Image (tube, rainbow, N blue to C red; front, side, top):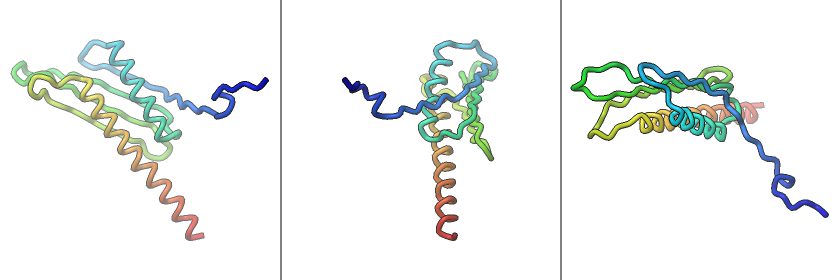
Length: 131
């Protein structure tokens, strides 16, 4: 009797991206680390060329009247040129938090990665038509 499991019918490819997380001027957080791993893992859908992901979450010291500011840097290590996003968001309407900055930084990284992959595919197609 044959197995009807979808795992035997389709090959499932899961790209695991090594993630290095650094917290500066703030305590590390298991919840933030989990979210960063989720966001980084999702980038593997757009490219299998990502060799590593480095994330720095920073809460630089500011004067109390300026409110809390979070900065997130995401660096995707790729063959050739890395994708780098520096994102800093000041507190707005007393509801800004580090998760919003993380989301925005990874969204920006995703857009850059998609542009990079699109241009690489375009270059390959142009070379084929020139040959």
